[in-house]
Amino acid sequence: MERPELIKACKQNNLKAQMQVYQMYKDMLYNVSYRIVKNEHDAQDTVHDAFIKAFQNISKLENDLNLGPWLKRIVVNSSLDFLRQKKKLGWLQESYEFTESTKENDTYEDVTLKVEEVKKAINNLKDKYRIIMVLYLIEDYSHKEIAEQLGLKESTVRNQYVRGKRLLKQQLQNSVAL
Image (tube, rainbow, N blue to C red):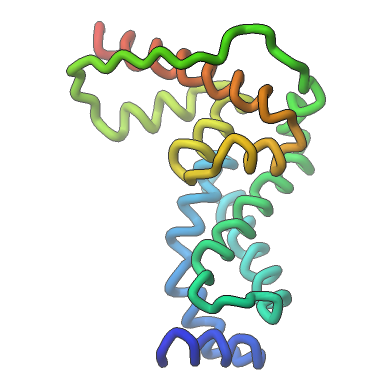
């Protein structure tokens, strides 16, 4: 079934078409959710909830070519909602303006890192840095979009990103030095 026909069938509540869409996107969405919630079972539950929400609201999908990004946004929202419900985003209540400079002075060193080391280092960051790093670096959200998603000021998101990046860099440098 061609993609527009598949989405049209999903809009008509065709279970076979919905299962086909699920099979096409479940792994990608699981990876997105897992990077946010950091737990295999919670990520699976979040993805299932996201698909339920998506199929309940698929009639709102205007441009059928945007199915992947639309599903991704739903799973990011579901993952963040899950963390809010579990009170793992309590740091959002601490949203305050940092006075630290947000200027980024990137100096790139010739360091070869394994992907697993980077993933581990990101996962070791505090949630307030890790979630912003994941959304910005991996999921390609802008600081403005992250601020809207988390209910923070854009400047707070930028500062937490800069601090998170600095902590990530320190962790990676320490692991290379070992």
